[in-house]
Image (tube, rainbow, N blue to C red; front, side, top):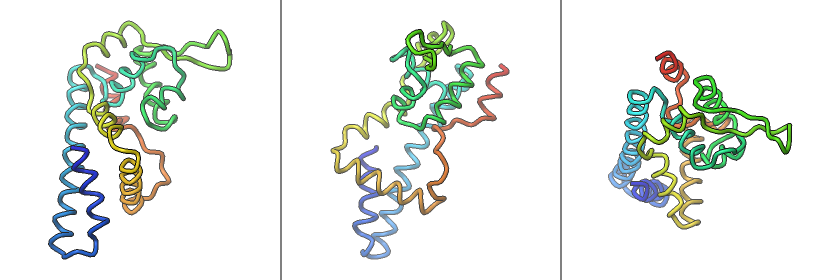
Length: 184
C-alpha cells in the first residue's frame, strides 16, 4: 500500500512533463493510495471509539506506553514519530480519563515519566494493532533514499495545500470526539 503511494508520488514528479492522460493517471494513483491509507486510519479510529471510547491517536499512544513504560513526553513523541505538543495533548486527555499516570522522576525532580494505569493496560491489551504501526513499519522498510524522496514529495504537497506552519496533529485526534468519549 505505502509502496504504491511512494511510486505514485514519485511518478507525479518524474513524469510531470508527460501527456495529460499520464499526468491524470499518476494523480489518480496518488490520490487512491492516500485514500486507502486514510480509510484504514479512519476505520481503526472508529473501531477504537466504539469499542474502547478512545480516539485512534489515544489508542496509539497507549500502545506505545505499554511497550515503553516510564518514558517522558519527549521520548513518547519520538516513539510515536510525532511532535511533542501533539503527544502532550493526547497524554493530557488520557491522564484526565485515568488511563495514564504522570509521575515526577525520583532521579530528576524536574522530569515527569508516564506510565499506564490498570485501565490503560487493559485498553492497550484489548486492542488489535493499529494502522499507524503498519504505516510506520512500511515507511521504515523503504530504503533511506526512498524515505527521503517520499518525505520531500509529501512535504511539497502539504506545503502546496496549506503550508507547513502548523504543528501536525496525530491522526484522527479530534478534540470533540475525544471529549465525547470521555463522558461515556
